[in-house]
Image (cartoon, rainbow, N blue to C red; front, side, top):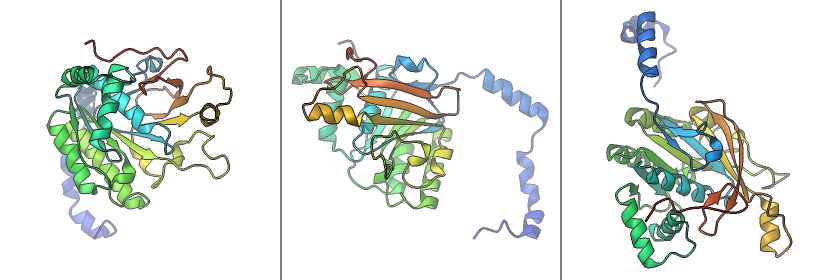
Length: 298
């Protein structure tokens, strides 16, 4: 039981705080050390961010969207791009079986809608050991999920993707458990100097439904969770365009298929939106011409 309300007890053990007291000289030394240390971060696949938005190692990053609005596709593209840049990635996609993720990896990595088996083998060899995939489907316990994060960090992964929080135990909706789980992820990110990208569903507005892009307070569960995370970004589908296209009606293809918004960024002043269009390979691209290239030169 917490005993912080017992003032006499806290007074008696106050000497325990002595080891954490530092002088202004210590502060200055630590400041110089930090300034002279390289900042390690995972870049996004989009040039439009101009290096102002990335996934810094040592932090937890929150990515959200309504159900069916492209979260898994986006985090897969982020993960593949990181691997193509030499980073090792740990990934848990608890809503999709590994056999279903495989074609998605090959198609997106090669920017090919229907890759041949031979091309798939070449992509697989190119990725090599840069991906540790957690072959776990459906609901996983918080303990097992944290163990996955720690183990992949120990194995050298620098970006760890958890897709998604809804599949972790019964903590969603339990404010205290959810907050403590994300706090544990933050401890793991700092201790092992990895970037943890946590995906989560967002609440649809009662009036406007999916037409309105979600905000920071639209995440399901604890309102404290966004405060813990270093960055918050959301993906949002252009529902009107999607419905017109699927129904065979005319639509303006100059309008983007999706928008990707940065709502919180602890490391720079960048907050904003970039428009995205979808390529037949499922890759997101920044123009209606849908020009993309394979992430690996094979």
